[in-house]
Length: 389
Image 1 (cartoon, rainbow, N blue to C red):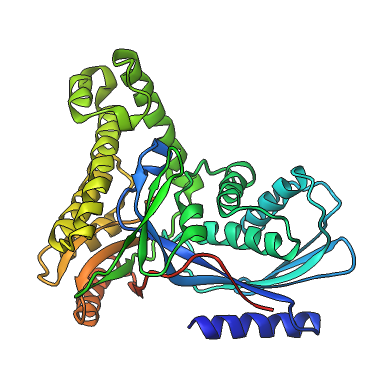
Image 2 (image 1 turned 180 degrees about the vertical axis):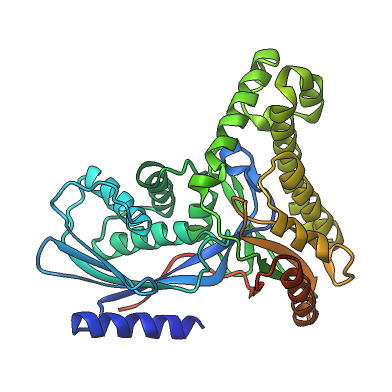
């Protein structure tokens, strides 16, 4: 799959530009084992890069004209590097322009380029194709023009691109996982300080299976930004009554329960989820270190209950997929993954049981919603990387 993606992308570049590309890069999507909606709440998250990628074939040219081709969409966007960069009405273009805008602000010396990109990351499935696009493109510019940016700087540039040119006030997790991913390792990321540590993710007799609801979300219309406003409002109330609290990390469940009336039911539910989820991430790291997969599965399932009932970012289709596997002996845990309102469920399942499970749940899902289920068996891979020139 990876080799085919590279081959198809580079051949498409050759056919369009009548020359071979100078550079090829791969940028992965990501999963998050646990710690959903916690990256913008100063907590810890536990993401990993996966073996689904965006491939970039790219070359400098002799002028300031830039041509970008989205192979899968059969769309092209051209612009001049010297002109002012502004968001346009094509969303995929804005992820790229947002990165370039920041590089221009930093006054890097660059020139025109030709680029083709293609992807095996399903769009809108909660696997962060947007971060892969931002970070992969930033990585390509950094390498091709010798800009000297660190991995951390590239992740932050990707995040800011989404804030400024796309209008999604996302946290740092997706970009960080895409750039810092390491094969067979999860990343425990401190979203407050950006300190991180790798933990060996050998799931032994278990594997990670994603069930794609085929309900496509967009964070812009999904209430993602509203959730951010709600938890910020909740935190300011908590700080008023408990001045020692700086972030949700200094907060505990007892405080939240005490302030239930002051917060009101909606803000109470949002804040209660955040505090509990920060603790679940810590517990999940211990479970992984101890190879206690039963405990890890239970934590994953508890996260879904919180996301669905307290944070209210799930939907009927995803709840159905999670509920459908609860009594399957081969499944240790299941939850919604990503920003919410569609996308995938992530399932910790016994190796060898995947195909039978997929067949069974697909039939139930089709009967309930009339939607064909997609599934992805994923492996934990390395982060954004240079392939060849």
